[in-house]
Image (tube, rainbow over all chains, first blue to last red; front, side, top):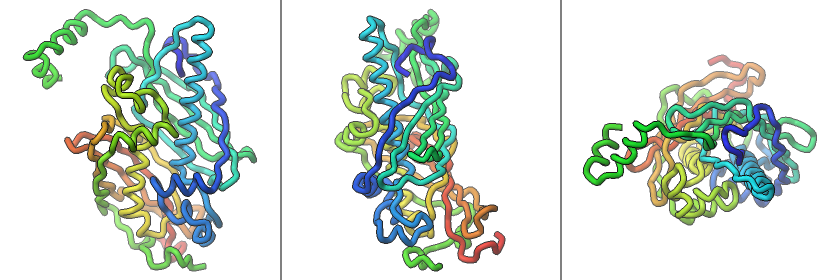
Length: 185
Length: 159
């Protein structure tokens, strides 16, 4: 979350919020990213095993991501209001697993929750740590819509760059030596 | 019980392991990136060039969820809309190795790596698809394994 890597507590639960999906947005998303007939056409969708229009799984996941980003921003505001300097969230290197269970229909409200289950410093990017997050999405009946194991980057507060790396970085910014060093790396 | 939408499409029995699907190519504009990011991923490194330059991404880059969404779109156009698809089950091992920057052209292939009948639902088979998406320099921008349900023509007939 928007805390320094060192301040992230394992197993702390973050309630990300909820979203009600309407038919228009389901069709709008599907038109751009997942134009299969059961995400696009309520009449044709009746012939599918869903029996009607359902949201693309990619759509429900994208909304969950938005709510996570909003939660990070709110946390950042809260830390600033307390006079603290917030940490830095980076992009994500990937997703270990994503399982779609119950489909989302127009009018369904999906609630999202995130737990950081583990963390470790990154081996490949100095000064950053990896967070292992479990995201759970439930509908208004408490049924599991999807669960995901996500990976995120978070910056280390107490990182001291080793002298060797500092020298390498300084050299890599020189006009002639830089490209050579980068090619070797 | 024949589905009039999918009856003339390929079914589970018509698919083969090793089949390679060409996704085609798409160029990702700045407007596409910021439109998606505004709605689903409003981190500054997907919206603002100055903030993006200072970030791990090194410049304005598409949300990874948009890269995946575009890959999915290309898979629907080239494959999923031509088979009796019954929806996605999920995916695993998704890796965003390199960001998609403004005006990058991305594309790639998807390979059928596994086909098996559902144990609990004889009307379905499960096709496992391996994504290999790259930019114009040949660098990987997304890889993942997607599991998708496909209707069988003959339920419970074995593989």
